Length: 411
Image 1 (cartoon, rainbow, N blue to C red):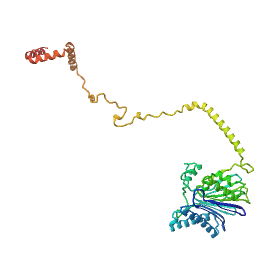
Image 2: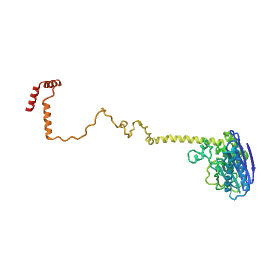
Image 3: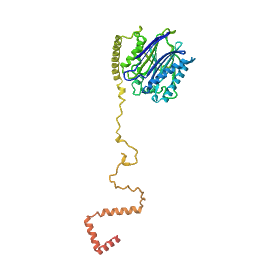
Image 4: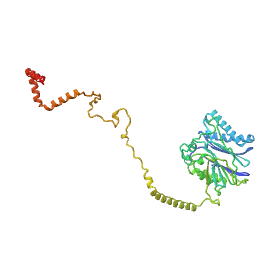
């Protein structure tokens, strides 16, 4: 771990960087410089592998130092924007000239303190935090340019789940990847108050410990400013140390205001609960709070059970619909055999009935039909065998046939 500290007229600062528990080399880079434009703090997190990430982060820090030492700029915000654009071009052109640096890039967060005002800008997922002593609140000033942040903004995941997302390391902006970059620059400066704190860090810190843990460590008055930066790194390593960890911590004092003026639209804030004396809440207070929480929970359960009886009548009507039997569904298909409403005839060879209309019978037809019916009644049907025998006799005896003919004519 490398660290340093310095005390100036209106603030003091400490910084530290560490390779972590997993990586073999440190691709983070930091710098503090006194320039004609004010006090400059820069922190970068490089990427690219084979020492290309180290080169990119170092080029970015050195480029900003040279830019602000070159001349005085009336607009700190515009100076930060131009400095970052120039650093991007230097990194990109270097990656184009040397194959070993191809594809290298870096994140960046920069702070310029001038006339007790804090100007800032960033690219990527390196962050800037501000702790406000008067309200005991840690503000996340910057918003990550990352894939998971986009998911959070769209409401697809919660902010607390972003650090656990498998694609948390994918950033949407970085220096050196493209010919042009658009840095995000704070439109209004922060006006700090006494004992307020400013923290620059790489994602190796906030990816390992929560914002609340960060707030607890940087406000620990039993530690000096340098020890607080070292403790931040220790806690990140204890949590796994999967990435390089770099921090710069600034504490303001001898300011002309009792409360800070912060820009509107701060992304996220975490309130650190403390006693009026400034000491952390003791374990006794936590135990008491736990007892109160348990009692409240039991009361809530009792109320829920009793309210359930009163509401049973209304909820009984909200019964789940039975699962439909799709085998019984009827579809408007053309093939009648697939339609349940179609009935197959008993005799598949049955012909359709003749639906042609017959003419109405005349009076002559009716009389003729009556005679036929009367004859049928008077001469009942004889045995089939006898009739057949008679028919055969008639065929063999022409005389009988003639007699029958005569009888018919007489009638």
